[in-house]
Image (cartoon, rainbow, N blue to C red; front, side):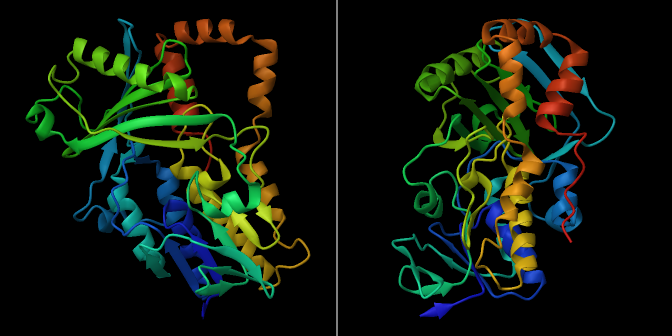
Amino acid sequence: MDSCDALIIGGGPAGSACAWKLRQVGLDVLVVDQAVFPRDKVCAGWITPQTVTELGLDLGEYGNGRTLQPITGFRVAVIGGTTAVETAYARTVSFGIRRSEFDHYLLARSRARAWLGTPVSSLRRGGGDWIVNEAVRSPVLVGAGGHFCPVARWMNGSKVPAPLVAAQEAECPAASIDGDSSPIACGVPELYFCPDLQGYGWCIRKGAYLNIGLGRLDRHALPAAVNQFVAFLKERHRIPPRASWRWRGHAYAVVDSAPRRVVDGSAMLVGDAAGLASPRSGEGIRPAIESGLLAAATIIEARGQYAGRRLDGYADRLRARFGNGRLERALRRFLPAPLERAIVRGLLESPAFVRHVVLDGWFLHARQAALLVP
């Protein structure tokens, strides 16, 4: 049986960030993932300058042969509405990336050992260690396998955290859709809120690629909402009338007042496995990376001693960084949902509200400094 200092299930941004930080202090880290990288991962996909800082990314190196689209503006509207608010920044506020490239790069850069194309078939405790697939043992286990992570299931059973976002999206070469004549500009993502504000759609052009999708808190209404969104885009001539898409579906949880248990002895959850996506935008890349870094810092501080709740401080770090949904609940108590939605729909036509609240606050988290983990 193989062994390692830390075993990470899932090689996405959360798992790779955790592995990268652990490898910096010389730990033997093994990442196990059922996919073979580079994997076909569809995602709207942008990273903020804070994320670049947190990962210590060399943009010159990363942009060599990979998609790295500077984002300098946004176009925001309501599906079915007639008014769009366009916001331009005098600087780059994000970078569009393709997840197939980004995830592969981060995993390789981590310098962790990797067992790819290896689904988790068994997980148990034995002799104080975690044993996976009866093939590898480790004193500490990190679940980074997304919403359906096997470590999250082991820790929380079949409990599904709420609220849960369901999304459908597609990504393809832009030329295959519009012959490079798309009105969707590179570097200017378009965001379209559902009329009931239970979700939003997006159109993002990243270099030669176009990504379109929609996510909702009400997953049962998702198919109808996607059809309505596509029809709206065609009616507004944002996409060609005969365009067709290969839709992919996925689900993830946002930060809420009753999250999954994220620490159980010497096991921890990070990223979507912990349900950490932003409650307003559903953005998950930055929370995934930050949780991976916080988990690594907690492991390093334990110095190999994981008994006696030595890792419980990780949950406190998550609460301090991401909150627990209490502010959202308090606002709803004083502002009933129908009234809140009516007010926000009206404000979505205000350039000041769109820029300072929707974009800077909900989507870019511009006022939240980068997380610097020693």
